[in-house]
Length: 326
Image (cartoon, rainbow, N blue to C red; front, side, top):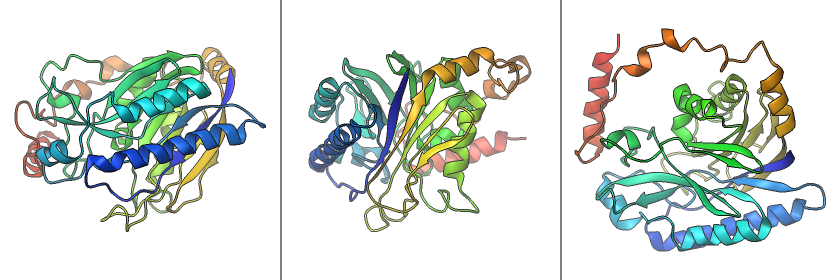
């Protein structure tokens, strides 16, 4: 009922081709083993989370380029590295994102993170809210009659786990969906850049992580990209990976700034479950007056449907959505 979680950040050059992914996977495997073994005399690290863009970057002019040069099918040789580690070390790994291609959806590319445990691959989360207009990969929302669960929550020995990616976290509805499905530990796989990072006056990274924790009575394990400007232009990446408890308290946070870093903090499932059971006040899930909130049933940003996703097309869809706003 009590274990430690590690929020791990990376600092790799942006890859130009999928052949470069293996070296990144190997380095993250080393970080996993070093973290679990290194902290073993003190406590058990059972959950490790890595940032968005850890394997590949989804910012290109068109999805065809991503599909040709960087996208991989999942599972693959890279995910098998994590599966072997999870089995041997008895841990759960929320992978950094892959650019995923799937023969069931020809021409589409997803920004995807996997939850991997000793049992193997447990969940596949595809980013629901790409950072538009720059990210040209597909959201499940873009595909008519998308047949898969867009918000998986997994029951594990270390709690009910749910993940979402970076910009998803600026949409309370997305994280609430995970919380209302029972997620106790919310995992943020992120590449959040300056100036919306860890520094005032726009420390959105810290503010949003704490808010999502307290409003959902859930732990947040948030791994942010720690790449320097030279590695991932045109942005610099502030890191600040962190763990937050269910009252919004920061339990651990990496110092701001680029570079590989790992921070660890305790997850107390018994305390979380007792708080959810006991509380009458500040239980915003139980207090939600959902019948009065109709805005989520309306369409603002239209799905792409069968159209290719491009920056120009996204700009048009955003403009149309803005016309629908009051």
